[in-house]
Length: 163
Image 1 (tube, rainbow, N blue to C red):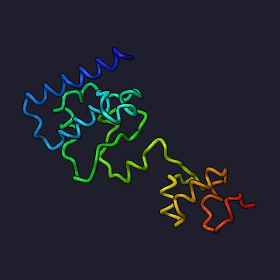
Image 2: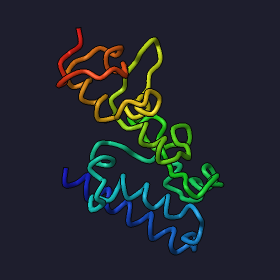
Image 3: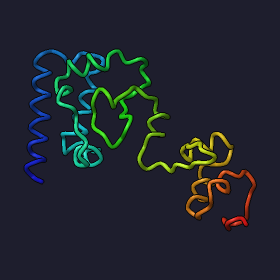
Image 4: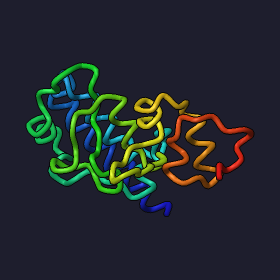
């Protein structure tokens, strides 16, 4: 494990120095690229445990920042951030998009997903659709209710399963 951490750190440092020396640090996507690389290769990065330590990697093409810029530029809007479409896959041109924070939050592995009548949404999305509080939906899921019961706007007493 120590060897993989030190090799990830040295890769990150060498890539960073290479691109700073070439004057590419002024590009609008520079910080996006740096943060992606930090998440995957810098064990000192706070979120490294969810990315690099969990096996998430950056495709070889994107180790060259100019290739990343070529594939992801322009960023359509300043409020969008880099998102992996499939969170179980690596950073690469076929798996990345620009997304809002709302879209990213809907794309987390930890989300509770509920399917009713063939339609699947996260608990937060169902809360928005139905008007039921998100916390109520999560409590109903935890209590083992069926999707139809979870998404029923009727109020039930003390989290007993409705009959």
